[in-house]
Image (tube, rainbow, N blue to C red; front, side, top):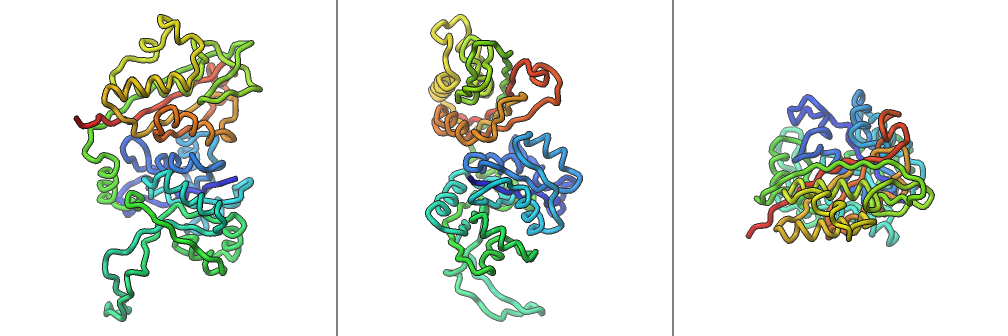
Length: 374
């Protein structure tokens, strides 16, 4: 089991913002949502440490499958509170929400090193500038060899028992690797990535947007789908079969998550909608799986000259519980979309409406696509 703690309790003071830094928008999502997207493909449980007073706002943003706790006065205290909320884990990833563009591939490489037997793994980049050590008066005292220096990033990965033990003395540090090393454990450094910059100032945000855009033309779309439960139907959701759940009515298999993503992609590319492409007028799609429709949608938009930058879907319903199969669902839908980055969130409506009354299930999806250069 892999758990992830996202440290998101920092203020936006240095950014000049009146809201916590994790809630600042980068493109069409907050820094926190970007970070969740990268970790959700590898983590079985995600814990977010929120600024005091913003817990409910963040819960509404991230959905009920993600644990939100109040962060501490320091980063280390926030991580300790996150550790206390973990139910079960072999490994723990600790990530700064401010490093919003750290990729899921980077998280996967950290996990791979842990699985190979390492107990502490951190990504980092070589130092390219000459670094000086100075005294209290500002005079240079030494110049370390930059060949042995690294600029450390997150997510950092640890064996759960090692990280928990390192935090038992309640010490503070700028990152968890310091505490783990002080406790006598070896820390492996792997290659980081340039895009995993720490977004602290408006200039950093502008740099991050360049990493996202690469001067390509972006467009976005939103898709919504809902189906009522129907006796005798099997439930297919997020590309997966849920054998112990009641299914929903529909022309195809009724996979609301897949359908919402298809509509979001069609909206972003101007290629019609789910009905015009796969509706009842197309009998060959009767009973079609959500995975089949995702593959067909991917083919249509690819042939039209578009690439998927990211898709996100929030499933709305009292059941099934998505968390235990989130990684499996992400992998399934990503594969159907040519390996695109996919995020899955889940929430309820507190007893209100079709989903809250237990009569059905719904989903809302957003898509970010790029128009390929000719």
